[in-house]
Image 1: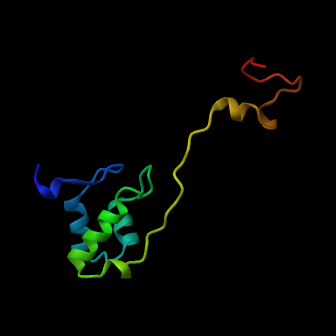
Image 2: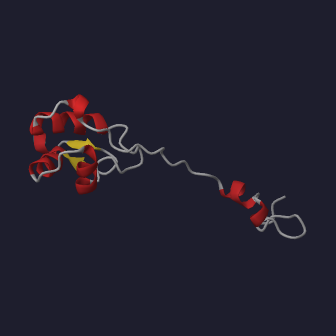
Length: 103
């Protein structure tokens, strides 16, 4: 595998080549690269790739890493069980039983 085809963002499968292309197209912030390539929009919300993208931006665009504004960080989503949803007031039937027959 060539170095350009290396995956930088595993969640969205964004390659080094795509990040470099975004920088060459004029993206000079983490947010711009995120919007252009989707790097950092996956399940981990950039926790694994953000530092790599920042270093690449620093090298290719000649910007110091400490001057790069951090991209927005969102908490990763977490699945909830259907049972938990069913136990809410909206999921209860009038007789107190749950719609799926469990008590």
